[in-house]
Image 1 (cartoon, rainbow, N blue to C red):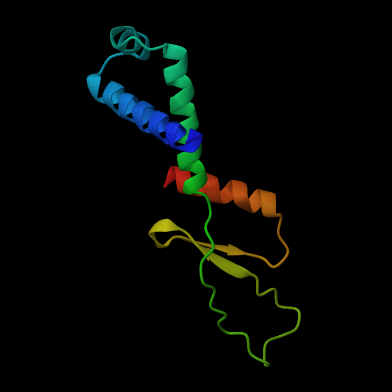
Image 2 (image 1 turned 90 degrees about the vertical axis):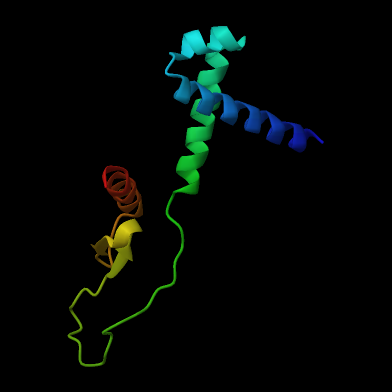
Length: 112
C-alpha cells in the first residue's frame, strides 16, 4: 500500500511540475497560488530529473564483432565502437578508463 501511495504522490507532483512549466510563473509564485511549498516543488523536480537521467543512462545493446580474422596483426588494438542515440559512434581502445568513458558518453549525449 505504501508503494501505491508513493506512486500517487509522484503522479501528483509530476503533474504539478508540468502545470508550473506551462504556467509561465516562477516556482515561488506558482507554489503560493497552489498552496504548496516551493522547497518541496524544487525537491520533487530534482528527484524526477534524476530518475529521468538514470533511465536515459547507457543501456546494454547487442554487439557484433566484425573484421576479427586470423590475418590481423597481433599488435593492432582492435578496441570497439559504442553506438549512441542518433547513430553517433565512439571508437574506444581495448584499454580504457570506464569512468572516463561513462563521463564522455553523458557529455556527448547531453550536448547533441
